[in-house]
Amino acid sequence: MQIIEEQDLVKATSARRKLQTIYWAITPVYIATVLILFFFSSHEYLWYLVGNVLLSLAFGCYSVYFFTVKYFDAKSYEKYLERVLSAMSSKDYGIFLRSEGSVTKEGVRFESLIFSVRGDEQQYLSFIEGLPLEEGENYLIVGQAGVLTRFEVHHGTV
Image 1: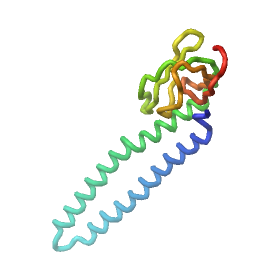
Image 2 (image 1 turned 90 degrees about the horizontal axis):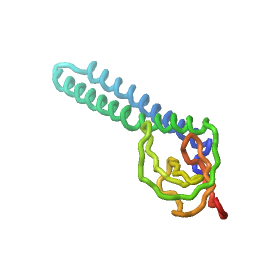
Image 3 (image 1 turned 30 degrees about the vertical axis):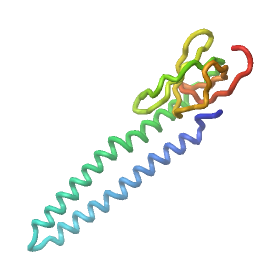
Image 4 (image 1 turned 90 degrees about the vertical axis):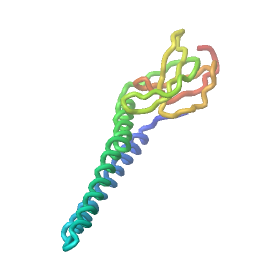
């Protein structure tokens, strides 16, 4: 079963660019609204000032949320995927022992999978949680940079 492909990097890059486009599309709308409120303020200057302050606070909160959560997650995933796909591939035969739950590494969330490879326990990370792996089953494991990119059931001895 193929887990990571080259097109995943293309999808991650386009998702990050889409987020950037959304942010930069909202920014001129905010600036235009603030300028309209500023230039149309006349004798009731206080209400326009309150509107500008509220819009500025809302846009500031949106910017902080955007760059600390959404954009950071997309950028981290894209960078990590780029490094994984550029790393050298390794193949091993191993017995799946257990899943050790979620691990966060460099801002990217993985599932930690433990295999017995040549008698030693070896950890592989997976972007996808809940892979159909059975404990005690033999697998052909293909990994890049410690991340599981492909696996197949191997019938035979390890």
